[in-house]
Amino acid sequence: MKKRILITGSNGLLGQKLVDLLTQQPEVELIATARGANRLPQSDRYSYQPMDITDRQQVLDVIGETKPDVVIHTAAMTNVDQCESEKDACWAQNVKAVEYLVEACRINDSFLLHVSTDFIFDGAAGPYTEEAEANPISFYGWSKYAAEKAVIHSGIRWAIARTVLVYGIAHDMSRSNIILWVKKSLEDGKTIKVVTDQWRTPTLAEDLALGCWLIADQKAEGIYNISGKDFLNPYEMAIKTADYFNLDKSLITQADSSTFSQPAKRPPRTGFVLDKPRRVLGYEPKSFEEGIAVLAAQI
Image (cartoon, rainbow, N blue to C red; front, side, top):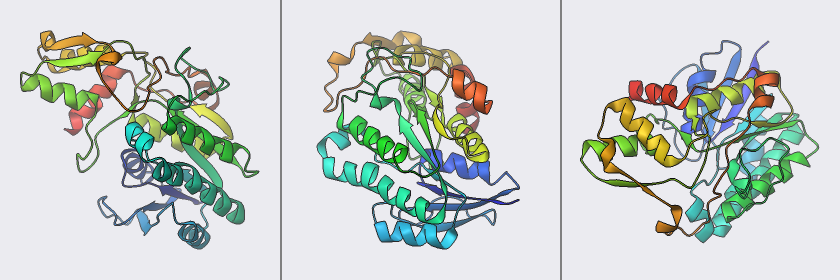
């Protein structure tokens, strides 16, 4: 039985990793969509359709034509500070777009997997389980929480994959991440300041893609925490990166987040408990060190 899976945001980091993973599954017929042109290597293993998720008619048309069994929604406006200053654009991309996808999935009886974030929490009491109370402290967090509500109350078959601080390497190397930033800074002999008072369970993009595939494959309904398993602050991540690449750790200095002025508030302590995805999906993420090794092989 072929499974038709449509993904949004296929040019993004998670989208790219999903295309890589799903084109290796013989039973999957993959439709990749993103705004504008396809930026991924061409392949006969998937088809590409341009789709702007903020254009309701386009969403209805593309999903109506392709009739996917599952829609994996990865596209979003994720720059937390930009969301704070461009609230209308953030709401259009993170909330209205989800409403259009819900409508299209309802019409075509598609299962919707929506990717969400730890930023729906205030960070007072992480790591969090799937049942924890949301309390966003940034506009980005509010937009993602509103999108979750739209999915949960949609009446369609749905799942939500929440994730934390995703890192990985895109095909075009267009996005940096903490590992690449630390590696380059230390190689250039630069001193860097890294915060010690924010805690996360950083997630390898390949692991997040795998978690999404496990949910989509099983059409496992409900909310799932799909993140890394190591509870770390950025300073610890930087030290582990320096250790892996044998770089000079003395260039890494500790700081607290009050030394950085950012428009949007960051939750201090998030991270996820992974008991449910392990039990229900058989999800097992790599350690942070294993994640660094995956990246190192791709540089």
